[in-house]
Image (cartoon, rainbow, N blue to C red; front, side, top):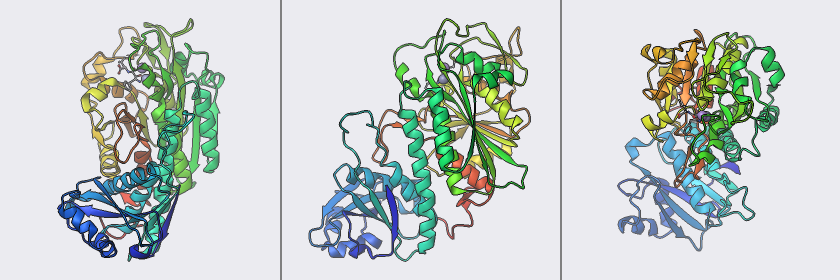
Length: 509
Ligand code: BES
Ligand code: MN
Ligand code: ZN
């Protein structure tokens, strides 16, 4: 999909549908009022009748016969005083999904009054692009495809170049979100560890990154016994993809993004129940997030060195599979007693975290669909964020506070160290039912040494089984937005820095 910027007056724009905001309380003002003059007061009538009250993501469609725009879609934006950036992405996403499913190919979206132009345009572009994802790619006949191909953002009296900057960033981010979602949607028979590596190479090349893929032989020579332990049960060989972006060659700082790329998690010998096991094709969502975020970072070119690491494997029961009681040795020499072969994510991440440090990472953020316990703790409302560094994680939480992905900190108390102590090895891979998300985080902590690190458990947020007005059901693209936004903030040249507006913008929303 193409996102353009136009200075045309809303009332003279030629488009299939013009999208205008209605705030809660239901007064037709600003762009909506201008457009309503052409409509002869129809919007005011609709609001007065209570058909739309301005609640977030409400919609009401009006046909406009004798004007340059064929329709007007009023979309609720909620309370004006509480307007957030992420609500603008939803505003655009709601419009594109509503109209795109009804055959409308071109849409013009008005920016509401009083927003930061660049940021608002970025979120609107991202929401519009993310709304176009086709989740029915395996159907011989697509269900209700979103047919919209062109979205024009009406800059009005805002600074055109600010709006254009926002649109470029938002389009890249939206495309990255969709790339991650398509990877996650692709079933395990078409998305093996080898396919993951091929996508890393393909997207890396497109964004001008270096990509190195380690095969099992190289993993073996580097002592990655923990990752190799997981892949033993499968005929598909494990891969470890490393994507490198050098945005600041004179600096020694390198941030590593690490993502769990488990292409199918059956549980292994500690096999999972059949119910919902098919969802475990999504167990590579963290890895897909890293690959897509690295692509976006290559396109956006922040001034910072970033490496992306995606350890990838299947977890299957097989004649050579690791067994409960087996002891594995990770790259840093630590020995791990495998209590439950279904706690495999932490095993593949352990070696990838060690390798990130070996490659010079000075800060690490990992993302993984790691524990059912995190879903029990936070539901699908937020991802868990755990860290060995208060300042780093607090900065992260501020930076990502309004990006459309929620993160909530969970503790890594020293108490949890006891829970994962093994009787015969250094560590065991499960700590029992209490604090399951936190003991998994504590396990990972053993492989980052003193490097500032944040662990994101996205088990409850990487995919959803319900759709919304602005998002198809299935994979959500979490954690792509957080990865990209945090990297921009660390580079100091992002639109959003420390939750505040950075240099590319002039005022807050
Ligand atoms: N991939 C799963 C975690 C998961 C569960 C993701 C539900 C998404 C939805 C992970 O590998 C796993 O199986 N974790 C176990 C750990 C346990 C054996 C300690 C779990 O959460 O049950
Ligand atoms: Mn598992
Ligand atoms: Zn898993």
